[in-house]
Length: 172
Image (cartoon, rainbow, N blue to C red; front, side, top):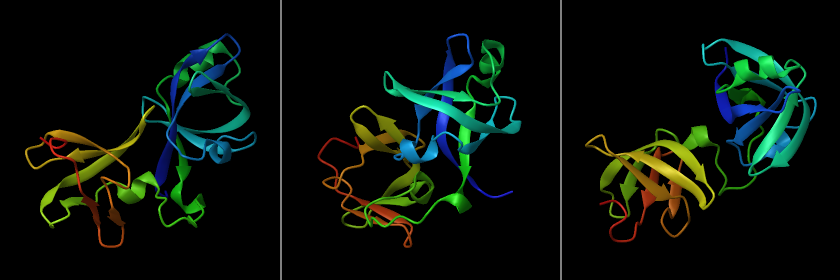
């Protein structure tokens, strides 16, 4: 089985016709969630099933999606919490040197401009204010770092590191 990338998560059922409210975990929802697109849905019980996008529409910062395989509210309730995944092998390479897939950043070593190692990128969190690097620090605490050029001036995926230039107090 190939590696998969999280592109969305089912937040809840919406209405009575099987529509689902989806939290978006991709920068390109228009590419990932188009009618006819087939995704893998990993349910809470860890089982995986293919789902085909039938309809999609924006709603309050989420997408409302109807899948061919989810015909009613009862089936939609089973989907609550499901992770929506795509195969990494199906992703096109990015033409933008400043664009990264989440999986490329996860696991990178976070270092300060002077080379001091400060932690590891655990994941990318999306908030209304923008993307955040979620770092695991050496003492197993967590730090949130805005993923903006002023604070993260360098991302070296091949070298396995992100360089941070945080303002005073951000990491303390």
